View 1 (tube, rainbow, N blue to C red):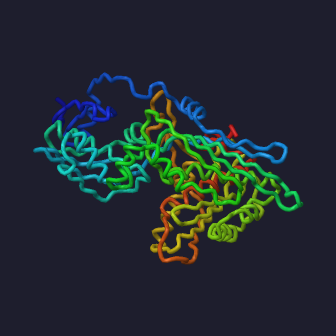
View 2: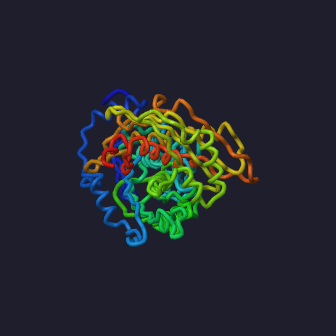
View 3: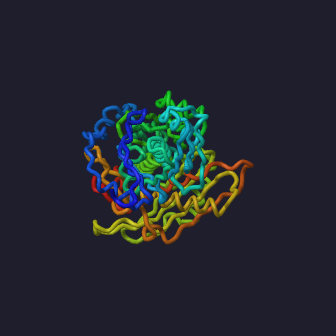
Length: 483
């Protein structure tokens, strides 16, 4: 009976048993929201009502694989458990779609990275053939992994089919953050064994380096944008995750016996790849332990890396940021520099971070300078790549220092940028130096995610050197005292 409200329809459970609700159809979004707020709806319990962050962490600890045993009489050990939270993608443009379902056919307009998978999912939900579904991909804002999925397009198509009219659907910020998808929470156990001196009196050596990661299952049913990998992600999700993990996670140091293993468990919390996929967390854990190894072995963090890195291109980008950032210079009290390096997508990245902390626990640490060097074989668009680097570095500031999602009895606590506190202009460093190495090949490597893991590691290492606190749970503004 409210002005502008055209219809109210119940939307039944979808084919995966994962989504149902009530749709208010109105002339405008404002009128639809007023209609929604006037409804009295009795909801069943949620799928994760008994789960909170600590429950998931306890489960992941139980399934995480053990590291290799050390030899206490011959070696020393450095180890740490690292915990990273669920992380929202939080794109400025929320999920949106237009759908028109009639006469056994569906036409959809949406911004999506995986239109073939979207077409198949819409067809399954509507009970029609994929050839009867037309997905029109429109230009859209950055999503950093969120638009690998197409929730809005599927919901719009289902509502249009039930209501018998074209539908324009837009998720609110709160809906997208509380009921959307997120990077999985993860724990990482990293252990290295070493000797500070060789038997002949030379420099020390690392003998083993083990990384054991446990995460809620990463949903990869979308594949990589075409039918074959989408089918693989649906039929063999565990194998698909292992393929991505083992093809992207590298320890590029001469650390003797090196192992990196991933174990996943399915939880009723929707997940999606987040910028950097596994590297945004795993590389941070590795690089923090590398810093701690250097200090335990009595070496400068830069010298130790240059001595143990097994890749000349990585050494070159590391040397460049050390030069441009004046590594080792005197810093004010509470300030420090830190390094991070990353090798992925046939490219190399190194970051030097300068960070200022405060003796006041209520004042957040601030990144004051970032120096980034990239080797992507050949740069095609320098200004575009520089923008990618700065964006990735800002994401690193958000994820390491400032924010994450919290799961409380099945509900996501955060609902907007008011409590999911991504880095703002005032949190970005006054000085960012981006350097591209000379071309060394004809084919450009990947770069969109490359700088984020290195920047995140550099920020964590700078924080550790500035405070003396070992970073172990993130974001550091919430958990640094636990170190």
